[in-house]
Image (cartoon, rainbow, N blue to C red; front, side, top):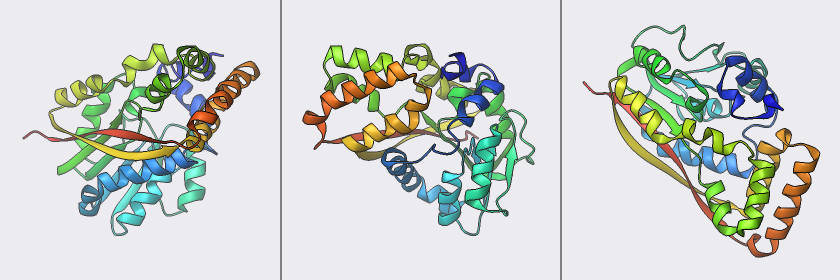
Amino acid sequence: MADDDPSQARRTPSNVTQYFGRLAHVYGEGEFYIRRRKATVVAIADEIARARRILDLGCGNGRYLEEFRSRAPDAMVMGVDLTHEMLLEARMRCGPRMPLIRGDATKLPIRERTLDIVFASHVFQFITDKDAAMAALVRCLSPRGAIIITVGGSGVREMLSVTASQEQWARLAQAVFPSRRRIVAMEAEQVHREAMVRAGLAIEVRDARFSLTWNGLVEWIEVRWSPFMDDAQRVVAAEVLDELTPQLSSRSFDLSERMLIGRRAS
């Protein structure tokens, strides 16, 4: 199941495209993603309002592109992604006039100093050479522009790990997130922060806070992770979630999306 392993998606561009190609139709759907996306866009509303050119790096199936176009109707909004299936979905969602490029973060076909926002939602943990990618983005950044990247998770796993019993969490983690221990270092905020500093950026940290219902959490597991589980893992996940539902069904969970906003240091 190498191609089903998120850690494998971080090793080569072909693994990234295989991994996300399987999610092209559904990625970004459901309560979790809708609320996280709304909170993120609100948190950077001022930057969006001032921007004339916005690039969504790793735009996926175009859900953030829709948000940016809605909030900045006079700006040029464009998307870049490695995955053909994702770009097909983005084309259907955003229409024929949205500039979409299939490309690599380190080889962007964009003129120097032209982008006011480079936005990357949960993209850099899939990039092996973060320094090369960050340098390429800085080259395209306008003098007053900002590179905005999201880092780490939103706290769902941490919340589950302390809410469930130790035994329940062990079963759920093994069924739903079997490779998480191997990829945590790739997602760490410090790794991304250091790459931004080496690229000559001054960093601001900003958190976008949102809430999630229990049903939304269950839905997130089904939409995001179920496609990569085998039948036995799905059975175990369903059993644990059913066990937790009586005590958690009425609860709301406070989560947060962390962003690093980098601007030219000089």
